[in-house]
Amino acid sequence: MVDPSKISSVMDWKVLEVVKEVRGFLGLAGYYRRFIESFSKIAKPMTSLLEKGVPFIWTKERQAAFDELKKRLTTALVLTLPDLTKSFTVYCDASKEGLGCVLMQEGKVIAYASRQLRKHEVNYPTHDLELAAVVHALKIWRHYLFGNRCEIYTDNKSLKYIFRQNELNMRQRRWLELIKDYDLEIHYHPGKANVVADALSRKSYVNMGTVWYKNRICVPDVDSIKKLILSEAHDTAYSIHPGSRKMYHDLKGRFWWYGMKRAVAEYAAICYTCQRVKAEHQRPAGSQFTSRFWEQLHDSLDSKLRFSTAYHPQTDGQTERTNQILEDITEQVGSLPYAEFSYNNSYQASLKKSPFEALYGRRCRTPLFWNQTGEKQVFGPDLIRDAEQQIKMVRENLRVAQSRQKCYADVRRRDLTFKVDDFVYLKVSPMRGIWRFNMKGKLAPRYIGPFKIVERKGEVAYNLELPSNLSGIHDVFHVSQLKKCLRVPEEQAPLEGLDKDLTYTEHPVKILETSERVTRNRRVKMCRVQWKHHTEDEATWEREEELRAT
Image (cartoon, rainbow, N blue to C red; front, side, top):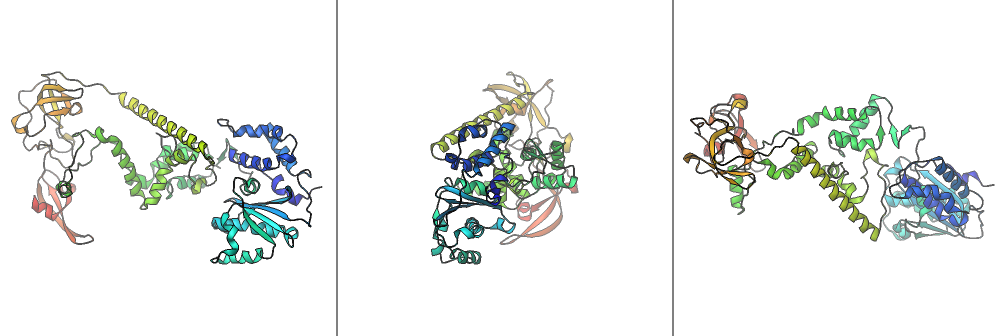
């Protein structure tokens, strides 16, 4: 009979739930395949799960193969009795989940051992965790190892030189005193070769009382638990307030409850920070970089300022959209490292994955998904081949996303064309703070003209016949700035006050109040100015020196 205490780590192995756990168990079992008759035949139902594209379905046949392999691994055909006249070999490994070790003699297993990490051990650095696995093996097998020669193998190379290191912390010094009681030598063994101890250390310790649905945790119908999950996925520094679609995509792979998608959408919609910071997706109406300061700055830098097509925001739409995303993130959190982490680990609809996942093949760990990131162990030519496949997939996803957005835009799009000698109205820039035709707000005219079309320039531009007072304005305009005139009036709309860039300049009326703002090097006087044809509620703060210059 085999001592149950020696085989409990294998016999108590819980049901495998992900491919990573299957790979770890088969790695352990495969190490002793020469002691197991018909190993390949027994393990075939489980090895099929490792094939690419095969969905993870744990059938009765695979459960039977799993139980049979555990039975074979813990029978006397594999395990052997120790011979105290011969030396022992111990394989140790540690992970963020637990410690694992195997006691062997002449290639035969004497005992397995593993345990979970304690709360304080989770914070240990990697070097200390690997050393803790060695100490754990020496303590539980002291009756075998004390007084006998022992060879210890670990996948942490620095432990090989532990006896020659001068600077050790108090924990390491205490453990070193225990290690010196044994006749042992520590050797480096690569992690890929140390499959047995590695599998035991990474064995999942799952509470099987949890209800699962398609590999997702069924969250109880308790509002406080749901709110905690939503808060962790939306409000923490690792997530930085994603939208409802990104937030749902992150959660649906791990959790499930009835009405989860609606709950995610409602939580994101009522978020106080999102309502204050995130920009509305309205028609582009941002200020243009045409201020005196901007022009003088480029003159002093001896650089030429080039603008996109006038009043045509589609020219630089992709860049502006990216800038808006980054601006929203940086306004919600003051730490650039957190902002970078959140953006790289957030789901992108165009890529159908996060940028981190596209680069490394797995999700980055966060406190909410610490043990659900999967793994990727690809080396050599396979790494290059996998990278090429990822690049092709990303390019294809981007192409599909661009095509989809084009279809959305083309649903209501109609090609607008005019003929020579047609009369059209010209759109005036709707910049904030511009006064048009002595009318304010929504009632202000948005078009001037009509003007006669002289010539068509290409597919989307027209040459207009402008009056003499607009001679300083370039007379070729994009079709989006034109509107057909159905009836030509006898007189055109007045053009007084129209600048060369098709805007109207405002004039200050009075100064309501003044204040001083302290910068790093000096004090700046500010004035609250009421502008012509505007109320006091629409007053703006301006620099005193700029007002004097005007």
